Length: 245
Image (cartoon, rainbow, N blue to C red):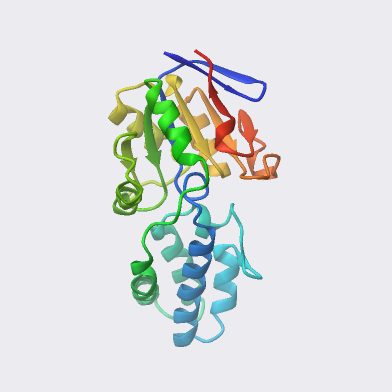
């Protein structure tokens, strides 16, 4: 077992570290904002007036993406349901509303599908190499689909470091603790010996409810953001994670 130090907080007897993907390892803010805008435009083209409220629901305003908003932390299914709810307010039936949302989401992904996975934040790869080299088991647990997580791992050639590439395909999403527990089971470790690293309240809440050893909040330059106040410790860059034993 390994000791991890972040600023003035120490975690002892750690066997594994599970990372969120978007906003934690992947610098995907620009992509998610563009994808959400495209989804909204496609739906607004069919149902004028819905686009602007949808952008607000997605957490997109003035070309800024809210890191705690639905687009940043929700699964595709959760975003679809939110979009369908706004469509249904125009008087359309629920099944029709869901279908309109699904088709718009599919079309938006076709437009952005050739861009490939988002780039990694600077220094992230080096941290993964360091932790893996110290014998820690590493995983990624994302609200994105499992296929997209696996694409991210493959694109950045992380197979030698990442042992778990898990997304949300159906069923519960973050902050349901069953996701973290399932991830730990796949890695062969207990939640109490596993750290969560994430950039949003849902990562923190999930880790707490699952009985994790702790949650490291990553703000990428803004470690004291309100969204990270529930974390065991908040850091500005991943290289603040240090192995001490």
